[in-house]
Image: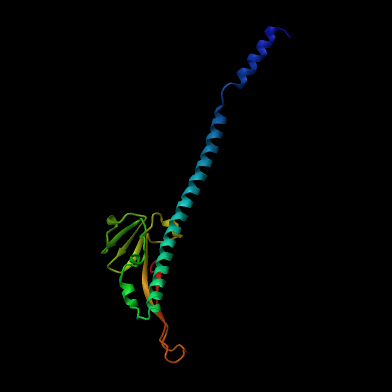
Length: 177
């Protein structure tokens, strides 16, 4: 093989390997699009779960604070006015309020409250969370989760030792959704 033939063969191989074809670009673009789509779906999923966990954490903190309030009153031997707990803002029981707590409102309009925030509605005595994304809590038809302190008492005809009072307490429950 001569030098001229070698150069011709080498230049022919380089020419066939130069550049990428339109098909290769299309395949690379499709693969990239699929990967980005899957990553975005996972990101939205984790954002929804984070919102759900944050709401549950606040609700559990309030439930614990209510139980502590009732237990402290009973340990000190004084009568606990449970109806007072139904009237007041349950976030007042927490040492640290959530960073996304806006305050107390009297039947606020939708424009007064932004999504992803808590507020206390003084009109119906409910603690409200405005959902950032409706899909966070399954197929919730509402975008506001409302929670309220409720008083519960056991029926008077429960069999109990003489001289004991009927147990009563409070619960922090969701009142919609």
